[in-house]
Amino acid sequence: MTVIDISPSVMQFLLAFIVVAPLLGAVAALLPAPPGLRGKNPDQAVLRHGVTVTGAVLIAAIVLATGFDHDQPATMQATTDISWIPALGVRIHLGIDGISLPLLLLTALLTFLCALYSYFKLPAGPSPKAFIALVLVLESGTLATFAVLDLLLFFLAFEMVLIPMYFLIARWGGDQRRAAAWKFILYTLLGSVVMLLGLLLIGLKSGTFDMVALATDNGRGLTTSVQVIAVLAIGVGLAVKTPMWPLHSWLPDAHTAAPTVGSVLLAGVLLKMGTYGFVRILLPIAPDGMRTFAPYLAAFAVVGIVYGSLACLALARNGAKGDLKRLIAYSSVGHMGFVLLGIATMTPTGVNGALFANIAHGLITGLLFFLVGAIKDRYGTADLDTLAGATGAALYGRAPRLGALLAFAAVASLGLPGLAGFWGEMLTLFGAYSPAEGLSRPAFRTFMAIGAFGTLLTAAYMLIVVRRVCMGEHTPHSQLSPDDRTPQPADDPGRPTAAGSPPQLADIQTYEAAAWTPLAALTVLAGLWPAILLGLTDPAVQKLLAGGKS
Image (tube, rainbow, N blue to C red; front, side, top):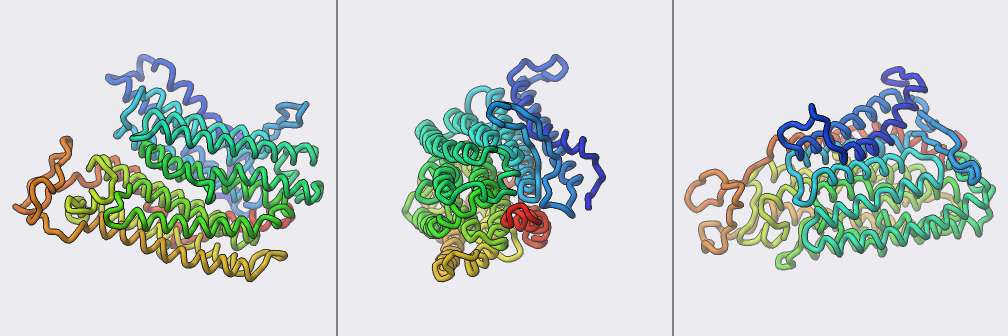
């Protein structure tokens, strides 16, 4: 069933356009604007160009989704397959199925919302031309990662996003941005070198780099020892990008230093590339190797869940001088732990839960980073003690809509039933209760119990953040000395208030509402109607785990 009937050739064009258009847009952003499009402000012209290109890509992705045959989500659709480097057997092979389509839509949506937000709130830094060009290159690389079906093309697309993100952090970031950018690039490049060796091993031993053919073969053309080595090598590279504990230490620094849109794209899109690689490459191509490492992957995953939650609790406590952006970054370590646990179960239930949690994390954490960026813009800091201490934000009283949306995103992140964050964690834990044949049930049920305990810790730190930031401390403002009261930002004098009450902050602005509302709405929609996603992913996952057999 398709929403609208689109011919295969048009579907091919749409997918190719989605991958290539941002790259062409990046080149155009660096060129002088045509006379009729320059407007009065050249900077605004290039920012408008970014909104236009990302908007066109989003529209194309939506049209592609409406033309997608939802009755056959396990079949690769909109495929293009042409020879590129015959000597190496490398082909330009593109296609989407029920696993990659949601990630493609998420990437197009988040990049468009970031471009729209940047049009009104560009981060301080060098030329807007370079900023927009980097965002567009980042989008092209990410979309290509989810669309290509050749191992070497996957590697090229996987690496394509690193340089743009490095410069976004290093040139438009905050304090310690250069150190954070170097840490990000070194970790991910070193992981990628190891991953390339694993990809080459698979391609050379099997005689093809085609991911569809390899998935259909289901590891039968690879010995167990080759699969084990390949899973170890590729898994390390993917685990760094995910990020999996203990390879996560680049993430908090990168998020803390990155500009708001950089954090949104890093959490909402780039982290998904690692987990997508586990599902698309390792599960179907090297199942025996994955079965060997699955218990270890699950163990690292649950340690990450608990570690990330404990780190967040430490940052949230009074007097810790914790950074709110850093706290959200550590929460990503925990949430991605659930994704890895679901993949490690090697069951349809667990892998579907992992894919659902991927999308939910992109929506919810993307919204959280938008909100934290807005709070930092208003206060000039993301320090929790400053926000929640004697000079507390008390957002419910000072910017009630902003406070309410922050509370909504927090309870969505902790997995409240009825919102998107719930289903991925629940399905992951169900998958761990009954893992795939050959995996230890007692071990995975232990992992399930630890993961369930991690959900309680997640609820604890998120509720502490809501209480402190949205409600403030209990010290009445009228009892504070003038030196302890929050100075009003120069560009936001606030509204006059009654004597003794804190001055008002600017509440959610129109452009902020435009950028954030789709994320909140989709969080509710996915929570109330999970079949939207599961109906796409489940048949594709079943086929993937069965070795290409529907």
